[in-house]
Length: 485
Image 1 (tube, rainbow, N blue to C red):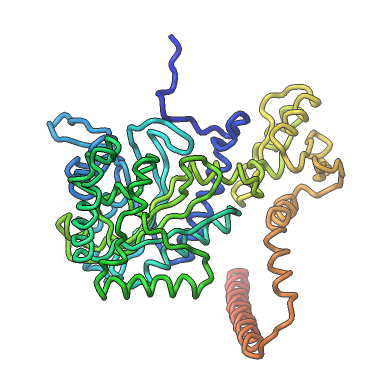
Image 2: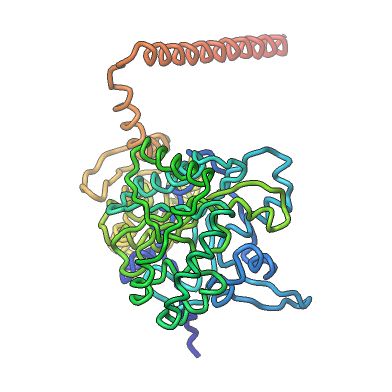
């Protein structure tokens, strides 16, 4: 019997030539950038279980949402408790915030997560039954500045990843007072066309009419085009909040547009909602969605604390990068590949590989003992940057010949200096970047003063360490001289 992967999920391989977006080196690259950007913005990582009690999602996501009503993987555990694989990351993060009393450890908490989510839905481009999300939760700050920082974070990430054709769409759902008034006005308008609405929208008319605003059904869209907008029903507080959001987005130069029909698929959103779209994924062109949800933590039994955030699918991000042909890193490869000739050389190479790896140098060696031309083909296949063949002569002379695989250039190197040579090779790009920055002339006297002060401080610290070493050496010499007597 041959076992096959279940529908709606996928394997991530070191390199997938048929579906390059499934290559693990691209996932590693994107996840590194995610962590770097999140940390740059002051966010810390949180990890929650992949399953939670089902009632958490019923309460936190909303009984009327498609996720809860149609898409969750739910099961009873052996204790008879209803559990569900997490379909999204916000409710679990809020549960962890409440359960671990994070509100007592500071007024503001900025968290991010990366992990798999599970939804049973029709598989389509960029959407899978197990998909992977990056999300942030900014807890404790009710201001518009926090909303915009969250938008800035994900926009910055996409810029670093090289994404193009991005469009930031924002809207407001108002505060609870505004939303309740608007909900009734919208419901009254849509009820006139109840017979013409799609089946999904008919079901939503009573329980969550705002969801009809983002229906993709052409007939629904025609009806919605004449619907009242929430802008006419905003309270003064809600309007001031949204005005400030637009002011701050403009201040930092992020292009955006107000989309009056933009709502989020989860029931807990209030005030600001947003999404960023890219025109590369067909019908599913949104690459992130988020907003503010001030009442969620209280709804889940916690303190009345404001929060906002977003969630984005990593699959969609990588697919969009490939379709836009952005500059991508090459697959991981060894900096150095050693080929031993004979048992003695194998022993020496095994030891040398260990020593180099302890210094964080990417190095591999041949274990197969095949003919040299076959091993060289393998070294080329794994994209080794340098290759060194080591036999009895190299061991006796303590010298090897390094071959750079891309250029074919060869040069001699002492065995005991390999670690330094490979370290410099591995860090040369970072070194050149720093050197390029330092080569720029100072344009401001205060910048020059800061740099000279820091450099002087480093010199003083180095001098102090040197003096301490001189004292220690003198003490050791005194001990040795006394023991000789």
